[in-house]
Length: 223
Image (cartoon, rainbow, N blue to C red; front, side):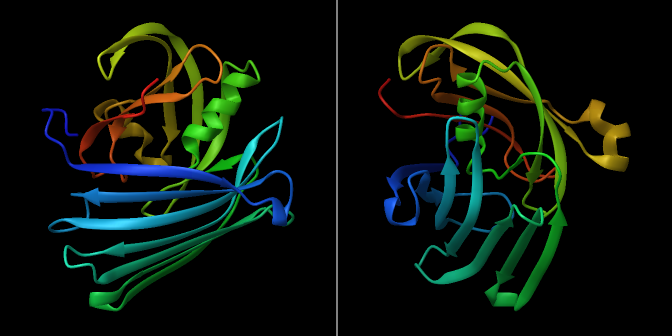
């Protein structure tokens, strides 16, 4: 929803084991419908993320995303792939109506995350008792940013009519030359349950790119 409380889009996500590819390999499927910055009118998408999750960390392996217009016609495709041997992230985006394509590769050094895996990464971060860490994030522009994740405290929040005690974490990006304008950009925060399994509860910040509106996203799960 936007910061006035108007709903923009809703999502359903499911996680499946991919035991045939390895004991620590999983697939997350997200289905979204509504209004999203960068698109005119109502859209929907299905994004599949293949990832590895073990006792130490969570890391993305590849993503596949199809975006549809309000009539169900595919209007955009997005792919990402992560090579952890050579530390290279590959990104491909195609907007079909305008025949516009974007292809980029990024070299990374630290742990790397995407929008879709961020909640799972922070969950593992909390499971491991960490309080601050720097990761690299592939954004929707696309760009690769360093992001500092740190716990700022605990607070009570209302989720689906129930009071929950949550860790509040600040996600502070290094946006390069634009850092001089960071004062004017709203901070991004996420809230996770303060007890195991440290589930993601809420997000407040930019919807995707630096020029997108600020939104608040809440879980609809019954916790």
